[in-house]
Image (cartoon, rainbow, N blue to C red; front, side, top):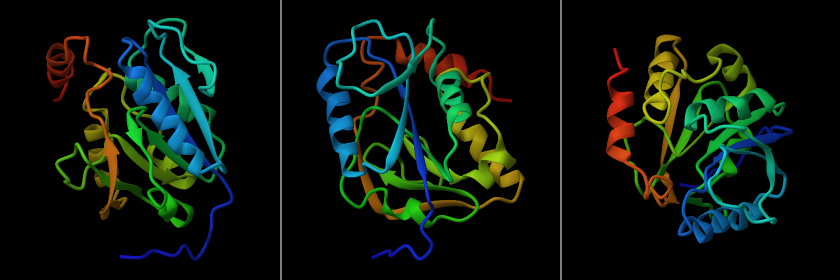
Length: 199
């Protein structure tokens, strides 16, 4: 399915939470930033969540957390910095291809996401999603009671409650090297801690 934007938004910001905690992430994160050069007009807002290892000088870090705050609080910090017409949230373990982000130039109200290679392809979102500023004003920030997981599910449910559309582009698939960030941590422990907060 081809998509040609009809009303181009004047600006797009992309919030990127970054956490470098083991050396195998260097090529993955570097690939992400290299791939984003396909979209030089998208402003990257990169928040380093107090990484354990030294970042590469070529990575366009906007600001750093003084302590490790977790995924959700780090995304919220980035959202609070945005000023663009459209706001994207991108994981640092994605690899963007030409065309992956084109539709964001003309989105309407609601939350929009393509599929990614690690998702179950439901209508929910996670590794890559975006909304226009009007939607963000209605939705506000993510719920920080979920530190690492399920903040996207909570946001999805809140959008549905507000009657906002949540659109999944099934014909766009973005490469996602899921769980790379938590390879050297106890992912199951972090997952279960946040799962207990659902209610």
